[in-house]
Length: 168
Image (cartoon, rainbow, N blue to C red; front, side, top):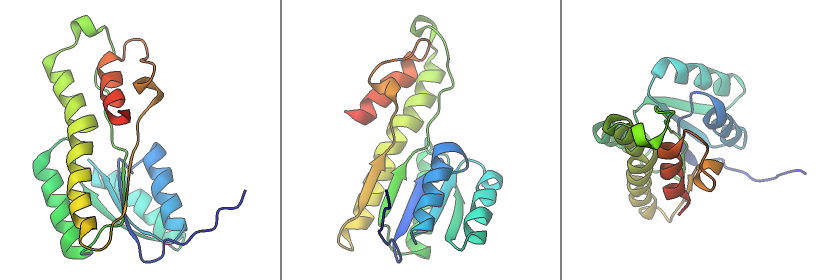
């Protein structure tokens, strides 16, 4: 199947784009012409993806941002506003799963970290993106979930709860 669409002139933010699914999404958006903003906690990992996109003829820019930290989210959106003045596409992909174990033994720290990244981060990144998108006619926001949000995996109860919230 051939997909034929053009994202030239579009600005896309992909969180958790330093590896895995996020990296693949970012590279795919860039291959269709979008200028991709790469976001993850560690700038070094992002720079490798940025170099790959640019060497393939695409456009990319890296911003280190912990998706569970509101100050870093605010700072990221300030940079996006200053550099691009708009945002057309957001893919909320960053996620964490720091606790593998029985929910009866889950700690408050593990709960908070998982909820901060997988729920609070998704919500506020989408909110800030939507406000930017309203200024120029709209855009698209995609929130990446997991099968664990439909059927929790053993020893991944906290993570599964957050992914169910993204689905609902």
